[in-house]
Image (cartoon, rainbow, N blue to C red):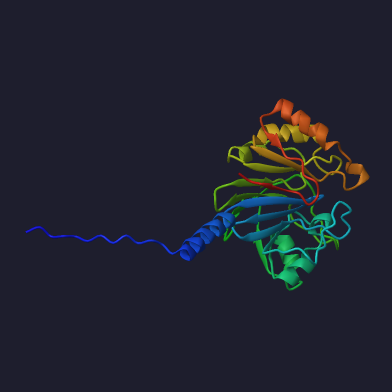
Length: 258
């Protein structure tokens, strides 16, 4: 006996299809990562629906028009204790409830002010909701604004949930172990080029060679006269001498990490 099987074709309602497409777009946006430069060393990173602020120096930062009371944050990443990097972190953290990530000494300083912190140290990493964050080595100082001991300066290597790697060097001189960081496969490196307090153009070019990142964004220049640099000239040197793409941002501009 032959059994008849009736197949019924389901046609999705147009509204249901639209909602499905909207959810798909939102999911794609949530997994994207963008980096915005606010001037000096202040960086905003939007990744997987989380907003990170790095060294949020707005008040007194002549390179930016961004007001600290208007910026959003889920996490604040502080590379070291100097005032132009701690910046407006206490006020922003208090207003937003953001968690501050830094070394243990800096986190203790913030915790005494009643703020949420997560302490790390050089070479140590942690899985956060936004990705894996490792604290990296840096050659610099780290005294806090009130003169307190700020531990060791550092940088950060962020691996996003989508697997993109962003290296935030922080304030640093050139060091050979940047090659090891480059071995991780860096998609975007953020490097100081201002000289005097950090690497200058020559050493920053060597850093690009060591890191072998796909893209590099220069920061920590032109805020003060002593760190005035020709970023366009440096970008041309990188273009001629390395395969890395230089992204020159104006304060407020952003780049997608692809």
